Amino acid sequence: MGLLETYIECFRTGDAVRLASLFVDDGVFYDDAAVKIGNDPVVVKGRDRIEAFFAQLFRQGGRKVTSVGINGNAMRYDVEVANMVISALGVMKEEGNLIKEYRVIAV
Image (cartoon, helix red, strand yellow):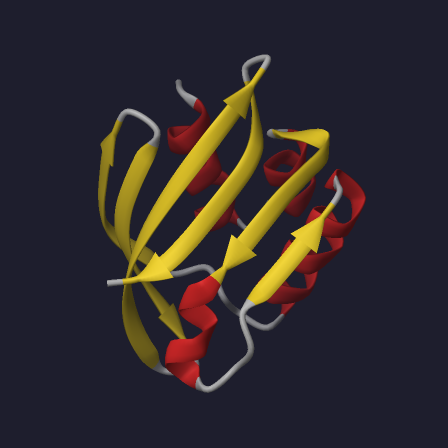
């Protein structure tokens, strides 16, 4: 299973620890799609902070992902957040078979 397939599996099961383990120690998660629901873009740096961010998200119920399509280092999917479905595109930069940077934008 590739990094993005594992990422989605962790997202669906709410496994913040395993999801964060996919990132290098100084990895970065960007989420520009948050603007779609009226929030500021999210920038989380470092594996520990990424784990804490996703643990909080999963506690709030943010785990519903559908219509997943993966092509190389890019993934298109729909995610339900705040009772709204957002179509998103995620692009990953890899380093040493881990995620160095993952950027999400709404499409």
